[in-house]
Image (cartoon, rainbow, N blue to C red; front, side, top):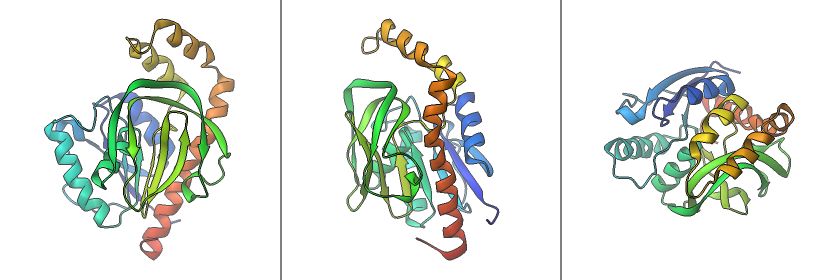
Length: 233
């Protein structure tokens, strides 16, 4: 496999968990950009692009979100492989003509997800798998011409269009991230009792189970390597 260079567009408001998790799971050279502070790459000389999660909503009118959308429009047009996680899944859906809305609810915790059809990103992952999720917005319409690749009772969990792959859940999370961030989600939609149940389930055994989804990072890097060697899939 050729040496790859991956741009990580960090929308997490510089959360140290996000950077640590993505560095570990991507496993190749990464260059990180804090897009919430307007730090976007000055060129498109990357072999792949990853967009992280965020506490922001894609429909907020923040300047950094508008600028990120404009940058992604061009980077996607160039055929560079993209992987979007949570907020990344949502913003790239909007860029390509999909639709994101508030759920009026909140999906948080260890939930079952079903694969839909066969897709290289989720190759080697069980047809029904468990991952950790935390989000109050959702993609309600995938972009025209894209394929649904994962779903559950809360709706769309993944889609793919050409060299863009996305997931709503968090395959990058480790136990430290889950235990640190989950209590901060307590609010009207997430009572303390639910937080306590999630924390009680946050064991090494549960982490081993959800770690199956980390396979998708290896799959994405393989896809990006193929594009680097042979051109657009």
